[in-house]
Length: 224
Image (cartoon, rainbow, N blue to C red; front, side, top):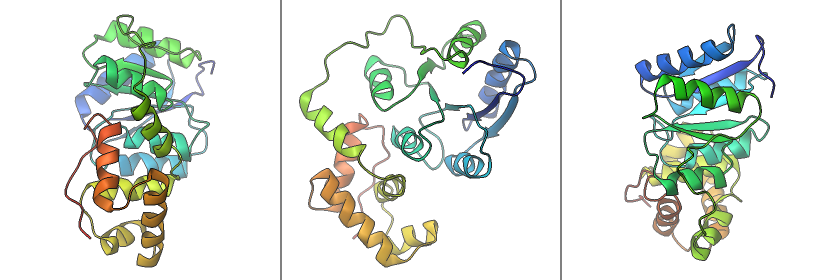
């Protein structure tokens, strides 16, 4: 993606001061860039549903409405043509590797200064992948975790959202209300989730989600 004054970018982070720092870094690289901001995952999805010309999303892994890799998984499933760069305070090697495995186009740790942010954003906006140079992305993946990951990415975008809500302990009727569908539809989604993940209960599904996210995925005891 060659950056230009018509580039449309979304910064999704729940900290206004950090959104401001990212905005400054982006505009210093590409002046005149059209930048939208979202402080919660629901705000981000509403923007993406409304706007068809978004070129890049800068995504925090943890914000209201999402935690762990669930937001990234959802975006890659629902909007595969829009590159997503993770910008996170959780920047250990495993988190970075898994972000890239789940389809991120780059990973920028929040601990870096503005100059590094500029360098990273400049590269990803030119179509390159940027990750910290001190992280070895070639480290072998545990076979069992790879199988779990492969199962998780078979979920549809709506099923990812349902699993996110199951992880928060919501009832079927509560999920149905939030998503504006019938309770029967949610039951069908839950059945499909269990089948795709190879588990027999909602609790086991939430445990799988927590495992694959390195326990970053918000986890509550699911209600039945």
